[in-house]
Amino acid sequence: MSTPQEYIDQNKDKFLNELFELLRIPSISTDSSKKDAIRNAADFLVGQLEALDFERVELFETPGNPIVYGEHCPYDDQPTVLVYGHYDVQPSDPDDLWDTPPFEPTIKDGSIYARGASDDKGQSFTHVKAIESFVKSGTPIPVNVKFILEGEEEIGSPNLVPFLENHKDLLACDMVLISDTAMFGKDQPSITYGLRGLAYMEMEVVGPNRDLHSGVYGGAVENPLNVLCEMIAKMKDEDGVIQIPGFYDRVIPLTQADREASAALPFDEEAYKNSLDIKEVHGEKGYTTLERASARPTLDVNGIWGGYQKEGAKTVLPSKAGAKVSMRLVPDQDPKEIARLFQEYVESIAPDTVKVTANEHHGGFPSVTDLDFYGLKAGAKAFEEIYDKEVLFSREGGSIPIVADFKRVLGVESILMGFGLTSDAIHSPNEKFSVKDFHRGIKTSARFFELLPDFKE
Ligand code: BES
Ligand code: ZN
Image (tube, rainbow, N blue to C red):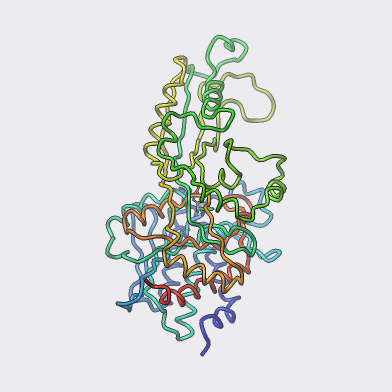
């Protein structure tokens, strides 16, 4: 009989092969033609949990994609950890920019290249394999565990939120464990204690009833594409301050302590610029790059359309134009309120020459984890033992909206124990996840479960 840690070392290749099986499934949640793949990924995970001798494993149907659930809760006197992850992935396009096929996982220079390798199949799978290391080494799992793996994170978890509200007893727990974030740097373990929220809007500007000749009508009829650009230009001033009235009303200002903690992180701005091939960073005046990218709200155009996009020059004044705009939010901003303020602002700056609409896509609340929570301390200790390096605590700019819902509905903190790297190219071509971090992630997770009873308060 081996220990869980020995089992993990002995089964490196088996774990990788199993992860590859999951990565081969193109479970893209934004693509309605991928429903079979979604189901295959969910079924694969059900099979994985069933192999762990859990008392209960279930696939819950929802109006959207199914939720995978499993639990093993033998103790009355030990904490219950709810492991959350998502098996859906972002689209792989633009496919021609991938060096290897997105759904044919390939190991190159010590990393697994595939869509979902880091976000979030590879990262969330670490916990499944950590639990397996107890079961298969004949070691009792030291705490109660529940798994909830959803297939709609990348589209804003529309069905998980009602599921939480309707299954509070089933999901009752002392903490949530999530690996869907990045470490502060290579070989630098870190726990993320803040995530931004999101309000995502789509604007449309409609002008004349048809596309027009830009010579015949240009100068006399409003051009929706020009209007759109002018309106977008009015959203921020030259200091990067968002101009929507009321936008900052609920923003909790950074304290001196927040700013000192952020400044103490080993951030290398030159390396950051070099890694992105940019001459200068950019953002809200008076804040550092780290603050801008994690602890301050933003407004960004994510896509814009209208007019002639193909080869050559077509002289046309488009009848319609549109843009997708995301706003990342910080505590205590409310996505619904921000969406409403955005709509009101758009209406107030729209000229009478066009019709303008602004509709809301998915959104989510920001979140901050209590740094004194005992689960966070157990997580930090586990990380330190496996990575042999002191853990950093940092905030990140991405969003996992369900974290705020876990707090609101279940009343629990989430431990964001990311094993990915900012350079993993999540959502981009050539997404990757380090093989070493996949392995260390499994070890860290197993160690966390071992240590948790000692930290219990
Ligand atoms: N794993 C990311 C979130 C993330 C990335 C957190 C990097 C911290 C650092 C997650 O899968 C994601 O992409 N979330 C979306 C949420 C949205 C669709 C509601 C995001 O942040 O765009
Ligand atoms: Zn993602």
